[in-house]
Image 1 (cartoon, rainbow, N blue to C red):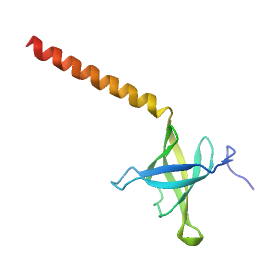
Image 2: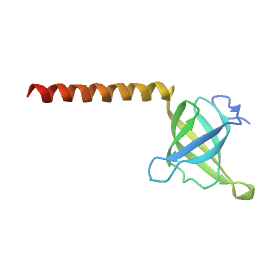
Image 3: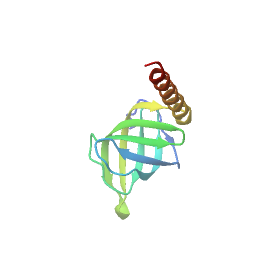
Amino acid sequence: MERRVEARQASQETALVKKLNGSEEAMEAGVADISARGLKLLLPVKLEVNTPVSVRLGERILLGDVCYCRQEGGGAWTAGVALTHSISDVEAIRNLMKRLLEAEEDGARLRSRVT
């Protein structure tokens, strides 16, 4: 019996996953399925339950917490991630940050000339 609130869509995308409570490098993961509230990842390593993660999926960054992690055949792991936030159009955010930093530097140069 299906207990999910929202239907999941099968996926064959690849994502970059990074634990947010450590300094580990991002790891590549497969995305088995996805919904508005969560996703299932296919990982090379185990992630502990309640670990906060970021999932870079194309131009989106999804933030969430691991709600389960099970070992599969061949040493792979399947993890469920309950999503808490989604950031779309990463490139637009990057460009905005660049413009804000440039404006800050311009303002600092003007202030140094005045004093």
